[in-house]
Image: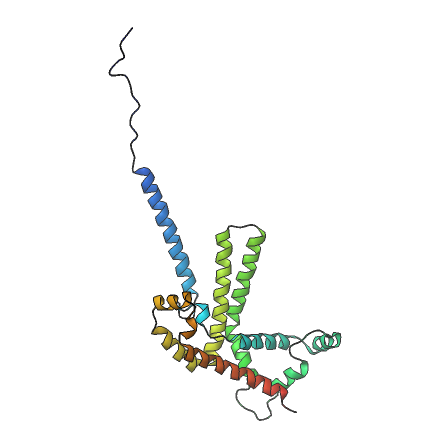
Length: 231
């Protein structure tokens, strides 16, 4: 019987090469870079302080809705408005309401309606962008697109809705928004995030935020007083 050869071939020991780790590292770096690029793209679209999340913004929803409803009513011609009223369709503002808001017997420079029209003209672009991203998100859902691409479109829609509200507040009440932003600037992003996580964000610049909300509320009241006043 032949003795086993001492120098018989053995499988070469497994050796790690640098190729795989380097490939993973490059891919990870590319993912980080793409994430940072997306973040910069999002931040570039913000018109409000970037470290202040939505829950800390003034709540001016009723004023925003009023502007939207008046704008929609103004687009409807007289015959269509009367037809809707005869059908019993729900209309927020009637033809008579719009006529009252358009009247200016004392020839004042700025009426409630002219201010509403100005706010809508200046800020409507953000609402259109928000609605555009909503449509993109819905289209991607229907097509079964990647989840991240859907989330991206939804996030952009939310951002432009926030831009729209901030635009209206800053133009309607510029001095009070300036004071609010000064207060926001005194708080670091870490402090803001901690308050939001603990549910205490209501304490963040609450006095200044309430002042903006009251200011926008007074604008809404001026419109309704004009509608309700006797001819």
